[in-house]
Structure formats: C-alpha cells, structure tokens
Length: 219
Image (cartoon, rainbow, N blue to C red; front, side, top):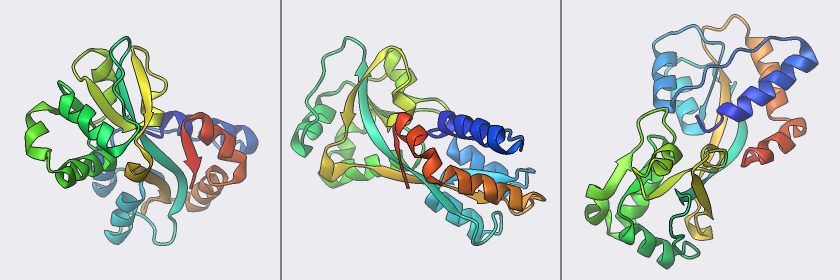
C-alpha cells in the first residue's frame, strides 16, 4: 500500500510514453504475496525486497527479474491538534512511546522492525497492551485521524496525504526504518518483456522526481 499512489502515477506516465496499458491493484503486502503464491494471473508484483526474494525462491517470480524501485522511510504521526511529543532523539522517542496512550503500526516490514526496536529497548511487554496493528490495507494514519491511535508509525508515503493527522517527522537518524520496495516479473506472465520495460522505466532517473514527491527516495 505504501507505493500505491506512486505506482499509479508512474504507470500512467509509462502508458503515456509507450501506449502500453497498465492496470494496478493495490492491496496489503501480505495479501499481495499470498495471491501471487496462489497463482493468480498477475504479470508483475511490487513488494518489499525481501518479500520479492521469497517469491523468486518459491518459483512464483522470475529469477533475475527483481528491480529495486524506491527506498521508503517510516514517519511518525499524531492526530491533528494533539500535543506534539519530542521525537528528535532515541531517548526522546522512547519516552514518547512509553507516554502514548496507544501506538499504531502496520502489518508490513516496518511494523516488524518497530516491534524489534521495542524489544531492544526492553519495553515490548510494557507497551504490548497499548499497541494496535492496523488491519491489512488500512493506513495507520486513518486510525490516528479517528482517535483510535495516539502515536502512529508508518511509511511517510502513506501518512503524508491523509487529512486529520500531523506528521511529526521521520524517526531519529540512528533508528531510521527504511524499506526497499522492488518489482519483479510474475512466473506465469506471458508479457515478461513488457513488464521488464515498465520496471526499467520505474527505476530510471525519469521517475526520481515523482518518487520524492511521494515521500520516497530512488533505490
């Protein structure tokens, strides 16, 4: 879901330049991987790089077809108008997490990394009852905007366009959680060359400005 708006814009530009029609379906990463593994007839798949590698290893994506597209960082948000806690250092962020009435995170790789951070801090047990995992495909920012989560962690690209929240900023430097999103050709595709051309365009410098506008960096 972190890449859905970016992919829609890049696909439209690729279609404008080449005439090749691209139809994109955006779902949560866990669901996307499951559907590709289940043999649904997709030509291409875009997921976190490690998820793509698992699809390749399982024979569900073409070996050697992985193309790294973007680097996407996690940001932190509160409800619009709520107090803005200090998140400028590791110690400050830890205090903010411990003080928050509830903490929201996603089902994707960024959520797993956040839970690992809480473990490293030794506060996982302390905050477990106050953590809320957003359902697959539901932005954490939506829960923040509704007041269901006090402090939300998710990809900046998924937070920056939502109403009703304020993005505090990225996690402090040493704690930055960055996910590389990659594309690959699905094993059952009959349009492998067309997919490769599309992914090459999405990874090219032509796409860099669009990526930055959506809160991501070229991979």
